[in-house]
Image (cartoon, rainbow, N blue to C red; front, side, top):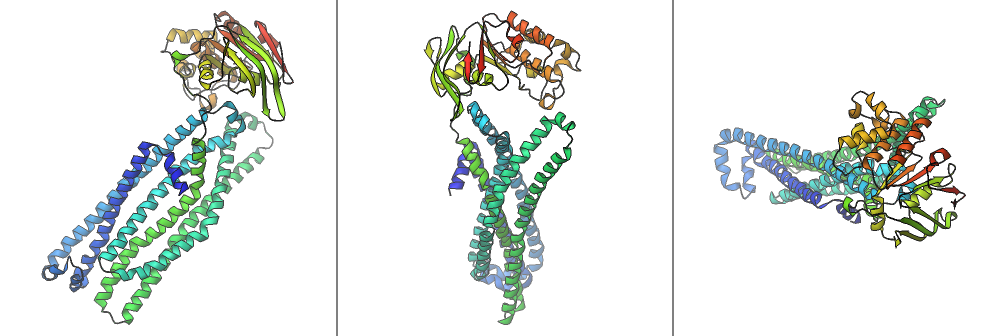
Length: 571
């Protein structure tokens, strides 16, 4: 029950309303199914045994009328009989189309909801969790929940509703003896589920591991395609890729095969029971007409009930196979919000004097300290440099200054006011433009990539100025389509240096109060790099600029420089 309550909590109010509407559709569809099955009784009786209609209270007054008008009623009833099944099947198509559209909507909304929840986490959350795991949650787990678990649950409920309707019809028509046939089939179905339970649980856990590893290798292949071109051991990568996909395919084959077994076994079980009933009726001397009408009714019941039993078993297997996705999504959506995602632009922090860090301590691991009781400050309107060799902790210090990570101890003051709340930290982040060596481009035009972060109304003159200051005007003018040029997946249609200049143009266009450059020009040639830094200084005005670099030349214009070495900060 906890599993289904968790699944229910994942849905929003709109989803829950649509879910109830879907159940209503299934109830109506079940009504049409029952009506189709019920219409078989008079249809068969007219053909073979009109006298048997007297056994049904509703029809016994019309026995003589039906016998006298059999030739007229039979074709009319054939048309009615066909119309019911046609309507039922058309409505079935509509219902399942609605379900699959609903499933797609849920997949999109939950993926977005989880991504938003991820954005609410601190930077360390992404450091401590693998990219493959988080990507798997956003893609394969949301698909598993919406396309497998939720659809399976709806079909499971619909088939249960249909079976209940069939049972009511059996009782209403006075054919309760058929329960003697149904009972062993039900017990057989429960036994099948019991036998398959542990196997499905094991496959469910294996599926999660395979999904994570496949996403990781797929991402790494396209990001590192140049390295792969020069590799002497591509076969090793191909074999690993093949192994993952083969294991996934084998797992899919096993689950698909096991979903067929219940249907085959139930069909055989039902056929055996029907044959036994046929032999039994013949043995006790029931007339052929009575046997035909009774067996036909039993056959129609079996024709619809056995597939329902089978589908219930299959959907139960699908629910079991995908139930881990419910737990994973529930856990992701239950994450506590560690940071405020958005604060209106007009509520930005007004940075006037300085940020002071008093007795700051920080460590990634409990037994490995990076900073201990350090004091430093960042003055407003100045250019601060942070220098150190690769791996010295420059970016960590920068992450502390920009509140991407929180200190273990110590106090932080902005303009002599202590900052402790997430709200105040987010207000401060609103005035920061952050450019790192890991350029972030969307698969869109150059123009949309440059204006991506800005909340101001589009300004064409400002855009052109930003492009010139970033020394990106020449290469953009040489491209087909110029600003409408598509950068491609991962920005592959432009060079690394061009990507960095696009991101720097974005910073000039957005023009916030604090500009942070974390090794932001390491892919740009020295002369262009020098010109860009000169433009940054010239356009500085009242901005505060923080430059992180292992190249001392980039720090020549700085008013102050901090050197980071062995977890210590030297001014």
